[in-house]
Length: 456
Ligand SMILES: Nc1ncnc2c1ncn2[C@@H]1O[C@H](COP(=O)(O)OP(=O)(O)OP(=O)(O)O)[C@@H](O)[C@H]1O
Ligand SMILES: [Mg+2]
Image (tube, rainbow, N blue to C red; front, side, top):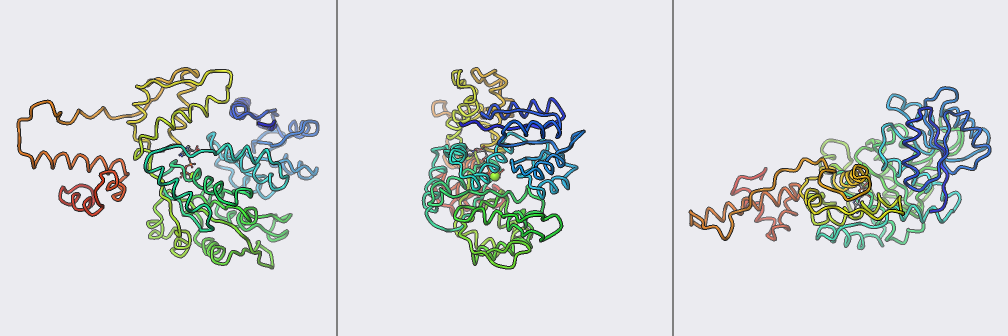
């Protein structure tokens, strides 16, 4: 990785330290300052590619630092760190030209996303190829060879070359963003930008100007023209994450873009026609969101041209070993001098039996944590504090003589057990349960009814 220098500004020494470690582990060079004034004077002498600053600091705070930097003509990207109570200041910071803000506490993934977003925006402005390369490599690979993941891959390959809008559904942490990026990379838009927008993370009243941009003077505080995400993604892909969190009124404007491919900046007087591929994601059921009034039906039909449903991790446990190896290499990779740690079969067995409500993200976090606990050595079961049900007693063994020889009840009991298990592994999805059982979906419905299982 080329040298990227990040300036960390925070008055709390511990906070500074944590951020520095997180950044260093990702290969960034860091310097730090305890308040805005120190940061400002450091920036006069040291070239820096990114500033990550706390908002509230004695002396010169983050907003003042940002204002002073912009006044002095510096356009160094700045990410503001704020606490929950100060969201208005975060909005203010964005208006002043901060690239992004992070709500404390944030996890490493949020930080990664925010940084890659900063550099993908800067990339347009500066055309620095190495940054683009780095961003792309950060997301390389969709791990997993289970039938379910193979099906996902086939769908990606099929839809990527088209211009069709894509809707990605699936529980949290199942890889929707990974798939969105994979579609972008596999399309002929790969040379242009992939622009992610998390509709849940941007305050509702800012989302419109973030997406559509605004002209100077469009509203108080619009001191200069701002290019929206739609324009940024022209020729590329716009990823609308958590689409059901977008205010319904704004969804009406989105519909116009989806239909006609034109946008208007806020306060602007002409329509711009754009070539943007839209990928949307939701971890809620879109149909239910429509029922609850969170998603416009017409928007859904526009997006639903092509839907990819990401299976939960517990429905493809055979992918766990490969994912574990991937995450070990990823998190241990920051220290190239040491050998890559291994994992004991017992620990792996434990991981394969856990239900992973947070899916692949939870697995990744668990591995990162275990590597810290093990001091970078072999991962053992004790490094994973997981709540795993004890192994089910072996089913009536073929070798032990059975007392009751009646065939029917035994077959029914086995059928019931397999059905329940298939449903559990498919997260209640009957079509997928049918695939696992290799029977028709109709038979699944019939048997569920017969045995009075589930809601059928
Ligand atoms: N198949 C996969 N191979 C490798 N890494 C994966 C895979 N799926 C997910 N991940 C990793 O798991 C984490 C979560 O993935 P991602 O952000 O795409 O989930 P998501 O479905 O968008 O979740 P949410 O609904 O919470 O936003 C990321 O760190 C991602 O790199
Ligand atoms: Mg996501």
